[in-house]
Image (cartoon, rainbow, N blue to C red; front, side):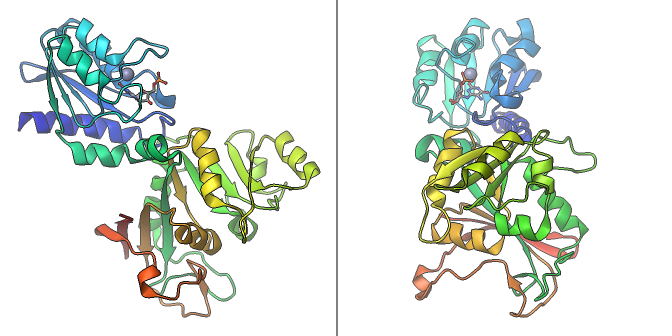
Length: 363
Ligand code: AOF
Ligand code: ZN
C-alpha cells in the first residue's frame, strides 16, 4: 500500500515532464527512508539528466538503506552519465520498486538484473498501467519507430468544425479551449494540415496563463509547400521550431526559401492523395518525436484515421448543432462497411464548462 502511494508520487512527477523530454521518456523517481521522502527527481528537459540522478543528488547520504521508486526501469547503458542502475547501487539504495521495464534494447531487463546481482531487492509492476500510459509515446517510438498520435477535435454535436462560410470562432467554450491548449504542452509537437494553415493562419504555440510555456514543435503536413512565407508560422520559425513534411519533387526555390527562414523540412514519398503519412511519422519519429498532437483539419484527420495512425482521440463537443452543410471535423474516407469504420474505446468522459470532453484509445 505504501509502495503504491510512493509510486503515485513518482508517477505524478513523471507526468509533469510530458512533452519536454523527447526522445527520452519522462521518468519520476522518489527516494524514501523510514517512511519519509528524502529525494525526488524527474527526467530533465531535453531528456537528461535522468530522474534517478536528480533524486539521488537531492537525497545525498540519506539514500543509504533507502527505497527508490522509479516509474521506468533504471537504465543499464553508459550514456553521457554512468547507468542509473549503477548509481543506485553506489548510493547504497537497498530496495528498488519499478513500475515497468524499459523497452530500450540497451536496458530491457538488464537494469533490473544489475540491481539484483548487486543484492538489492527489486519489486516490479507497481503502478504499471499508469506508467505504461505515461510512457506510451516513448514505447511507440522504440517499438514502431513512430510517435504516439493523439487527434484532438473540437466540434458541434453533429461533428462540424465550422459553418458553411467557414465561421468557427468559437464552437467550444473557454474551458474546453483552455484544456485543448494545455494538451499542446504535454506533446512534443502539434501537427496540422496545410489547409488549416491557409484557412486560419494559426500560431500553434502553447500559451497559457499560469502555465509554463513549453517549446512545442509546430509540424505541418504540406505536400506542395503551400505554406505562406509571410504567415505567422513561418514568421515565428526563428523562435519556435517549425517542421514541414512535404512530397518528393517540391519546388527547390520554395524549399530553399523555407530553409532560409528557419524551417526544418522532411521529404516523404507521395501517396495516392497527399503524402504517405506513415512515412511522415516515421521520419519525425527518427528525428526524435514521441508524442504528436494532431489538430486537423478534416483532410488530415481523415487521412490519419484511414491509415490507422490515430492512437488516442481527445474529442471536445459543444452543445451546438450546425448541420451537414457545415465543415465536418473528419473528411470522407471511403468507408463502406461499418466493420471497416475506425472504432475506438472510451477511456473517460468529463464535463468541461458547457462542453463535454471524451477521451478514447484505439486498441
Ligand atoms: C532512466 N531514467 O530518467 C530516463 C531513462 O540518451 P541517454 O543516455 O539519456 O539514454 C536514453 C535512454 O535512457 C532512453 O532510451 C531510455 O531507455 C532511458 N531513459 N532511464 O534510467 C530516466 N529518462
Ligand atoms: Zn538512467
